[in-house]
Image 1 (cartoon, rainbow, N blue to C red):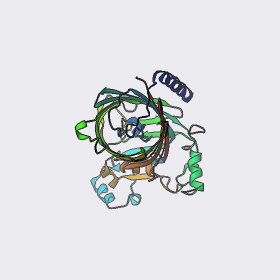
Image 2: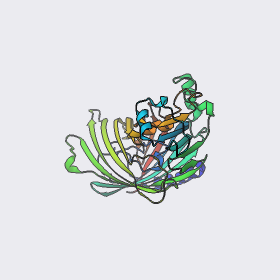
Image 3: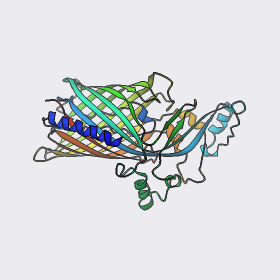
Image 4: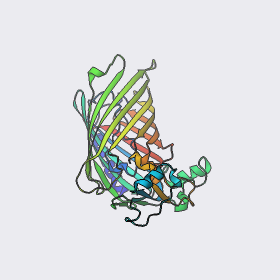
Length: 404
């Protein structure tokens, strides 16, 4: 499956190179690929990337990106007692001290769910950006995913071996979260929601996550070329097509970018943006419950330095930060009861559920090389909170003009 996908990408690239001969050396703010995480719930929804461009582009461009993220959550079960008196008692206890014995729905009624996630998730995006007016841009994106064991060479940095080598030799200690205990390079991807519906994926499962339509408006009256301050607003529509979540998401976003041009003609860009997504506004059938919080909000910021060469190529270096709101309603964290192999695993056995009640954040380091006719971006993303959502992620993208 991977070989077929890369052959298709190679043919698309050849066609695009032959058609696009216009220079892309002019830099339109911060032109990132998708920096969304390969979160095991997030991949099924049309989450939004912030747009840090300065203005609507004057050429249609094609962007292909691929990411690889390692996510690991040992098997854990969650009970949500329905009895108000039990909830009240639990609300005054630390979650790991709560004692709850489930007998049946008549004597100890409770909602039940379980999860285990162990895979390297590879994502692929094909995006076309079309200028539709001087201040307007339309983006259309296809996103797809491949579930893998994370073997070399396709997951050089995000494989289990690489991550556990880092823990053993640099930081974290020997097998701190139980990857070696359960076995390296495994795929175990199964989630049973509170209504009994099951999401399960196997090694080499490939699926189309959905198609997205993104419109961005760059109002000149809110921007200032004199101050090098730029604003844009986005409206977003996502059609999710996987068999686990056939639905429609909608969202809005807003972004602010400040540009500094140095005497050397190199540039700094500072950007800040936010978005709000309404998940599952319309469901086409019964979907798996991947978070009962209907809204996902996110904030992103980035600092980027660009150095231009004598030939008008450039090198850009960026630091990007993203934080996203929780997938589940926070109130449930005050009374849930979790069961897992805490005796065998040093830490993190509970993360499969606890992280669904916490905000998720990640830092990303980016490098972009731009020259006539294409731009290539590489990035490394790390979850410093160690929520494994995912733990480590890498990505690569290529952008090519396809219109004169």
